[in-house]
Amino acid sequence: MVTFACQTREKNTMLFRKIIGYLNPASFFKKSNGNFNLRMMHGINKISILMFLICIVVLIVRYLSRS
Image (cartoon, rainbow, N blue to C red; front, side, top):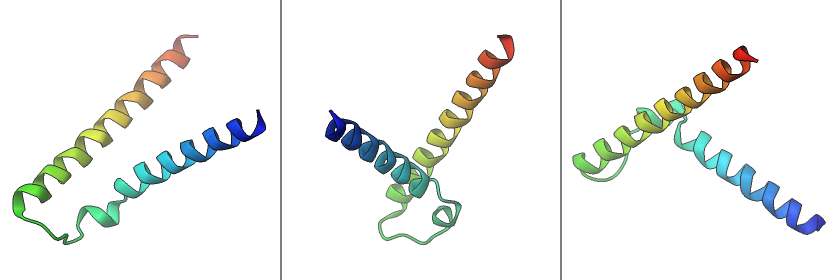
């Protein structure tokens, strides 16, 4: 049972590290390899993930303020 909890915690931290690394402001303006379309696709994906996370925070704040 302990190993299952440790594995779940490690997977969660790995997921959060990937999200934070992907949304790192330093990587927004980094010149990456690939063509223009690929860079634009990644930029739009970063913007949509950031908007999603902001909306989740707003929903949590609104839920907690109603209690």
